[in-house]
Image 1 (cartoon, rainbow over the protein chains, first blue to last red):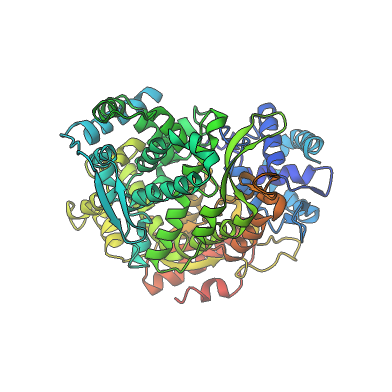
Image 2 (image 1 turned 60 degrees about the vertical axis):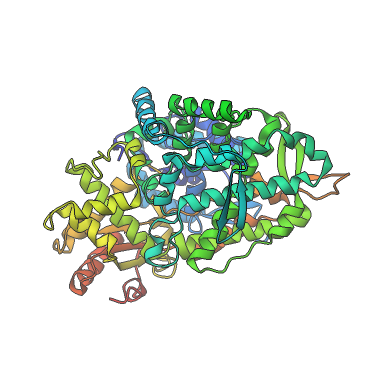
Amino acid sequence: MASINPLTYKNPYDVVAAILHFYPDNSFRNDREEIHVAFEKLRKKHSKLLKEFVFRDNLLFPRSKILDEVLSNLQPEYLGKINPTYDTYAIKKDNLEKFWDLKLKKSFKSNKTEFEEIAKELHSIIK
Amino acid sequence: MGAAFENAIDQFVDEFVNAYPVSFPEDPGKVVHDALWGTQHLKPYEVAVLNTPLLQRLRGIKQTAFSYLIFPSATHSRFEHTLGVLYQSNQLLTALSQTPKYQKILKDKIDLVRMTALLHDCGHGPFSHSTEEIYKFFPDMQSLIGPGGKHEGWTPHELLSYYIIKSTPFKLFFKTVIEKYNINIDIDLAAELIVGGVKDPSLKFVQDIINGPFDADKIDYIFRDGHFSGLPLQIDLDRLWYSVQIADIRRPAKDTLKMLIMSINGMVPLEQILFSKMVLFTSLYQHHKVRACDCMLKAIINYAKTNDQKIGKRDLSKTTNFLWLTDSRIYAEADLRKKNDPLHKLIHDLKFRRLLKRALIISKTTVENGSSKDLFEYSALKRFCNDSYAKDPELRKLAKKIWENAGRPCRVEQIWVDLPKAPPTGTADDTYINKGTFSKPDYVTLKDVFRVDDWAHNYVEHNWRGHVFCPEDKDIRKKVAISAKKILEEEFNVKFNKSAIKLCKI
């Protein structure tokens, strides 16, 4: 197994949860291409926090298996899809607030500003 | 790392392609019978490739790894699947050829597609995806497919197939085949098709036959795995073949792609493919006993690596060394070791089905809802259900805590926290549908018609299970169950209900 550096490793699940916690809206469009393209773009700028989101770029659009998995795993507690069209992701802000307070705040205290920045940038791309 | 990896591939290919005399059959080639698809004809040069140890070794690799220990008839091999993919790719080609418009562009692709089908799984190691799930996190593999790697995000066995085909020894062999049979197959392109990396946008449809949303690979494995495990799954193949088309898909600010698409009439088989895949994941690939076997295999490999032990005379800390082994070679290691050797015990237990058992079930129905301000719901336990290299080490730490808290009732290698990742979805974004007519087409993605992936996601979500596994002994299971419940509740701020242990039937 590859060795983990606890100083630099960020669990992708926690990273997306933190971004959604600071996301300046309660929902965003469920457009996989748009979301993956946005994350790939953000990863270039925020390479340390988004390092683990490995992207494959030889497909129809750049995509990350890990991002797909995390968006799936965050459901239903932190993220939901609005029925019946599933066109929109609803962010469950109350639950994310609890997750941030109980778990994430401690491990991400030095990254708070950057997460806020990523969330704003993501919002400006995907809305 | 790159050069060492390539050298190791060269050595393997030299041994499995060029070290022994190759037979070059004459016309008319060979007829092969398959329990699933019936009879198919192989051209002489295809037989020459199929006869190499590189592909013959696939007879010794079970397609669904340990499923046969739970579904006794699921003993089919990668070799049978390879021939099935050849058959299904030919069926797709034949179906497309019925349309006169496509005949010209298909003419020089048929031999290429068939050869790609034959070679598409040549990079599989013993127990197929079960070892792939292990070696994909090895440093040599991560340096290629991990963050910043040359092939970031590629699938490990596809990458191995790619490197094998692109290797100098394989090209040397294939040059002989080309000269001998006077054929024209671009073997580099075959390698690109396998990894889904074809650069020419006019060839995307060729790639789609081998590596696409309704490719020959999926059609074969869904039918084959379902049939031989005894799970009745159906896809309306006649409808699928009838509905397949080739279309120029124009995408804003991007290349126009010549893609394999489906007419609106083919929606039902597409939905059947996706649903069948989900059923296979929940019922077969992620059956709790199959997952227990996978954990036992991890224990074997981890033990060998940690203690500098070789299996099949191979150091299993290097990805390429897995290529030299088959399922039986790993099992045989038990016989070559003394009974008091831990590796003998670990392998013997797996071979003779003394499987680990469930001590705790993690699911939507075994975790209380998080109405309390200090508690999360079960999603919090899915923190490690992703393809990260950190997953296994983190889960091993948890398993060790559980083991210590339980009073170390067995070997630590016998305690596992297993949180399987969700099956891949995404078909709806990759699949284009012609909702117009053949002469007046109107192309949209499948998700624009019906969000079938999201629908499938709900099914998977409902059926997802994680487990804590331990040895069968009742006393050990009780201790581990209590310990696992306590540790996981503390670590994840969740609360298990009674079913979490009760359903394990200790």
